[in-house]
Image 1 (cartoon, one colour):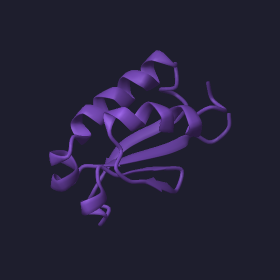
Image 2 (tube, one colour):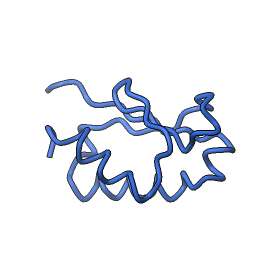
Image 3 (cartoon, helix red, strand yellow):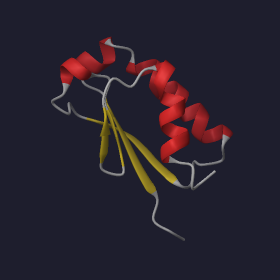
Image 4 (spheres, helix red, strand yellow):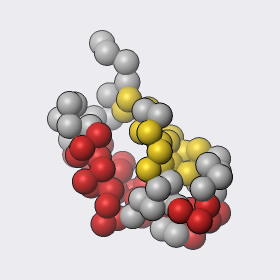
Length: 84
């Protein structure tokens, strides 16, 4: 099996106050709905040091800033297209 894609979302207080809880819930549902649970390692991360640009996440080493509910689906579809 190919190596799994790693996704991390910042769980720092600034990202949390900017709505990352809703983004986390959306990502979990997206992964389940698209049967990607076994292909993605999704976990929380400590502060990424980009607080004023949050919520922040990293997908396979690429950092995404300002990840909101309105942006997350397009990011996931682009970054995970090869798995779906």
